[in-house]
Length: 70
Image (cartoon, rainbow, N blue to C red; front, side, top):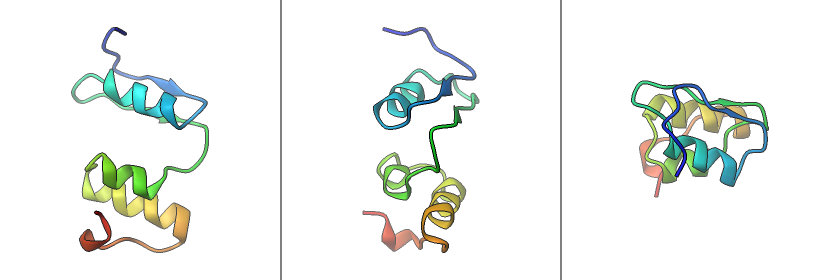
């Protein structure tokens, strides 16, 4: 298992991003340069509402309401 990281860098996205988030220390940040975040992925993670909103805005040009997260 990977050691906890406070600033993982993700250049691939997808599964690599998921792994980066699993090893993230509390209060840490992930830098993703693979592309814009996926709004559905943010919902699946139950990410912070601000992150979900921004992910949706980047991908779809508009924000999501809480009911959009399944």
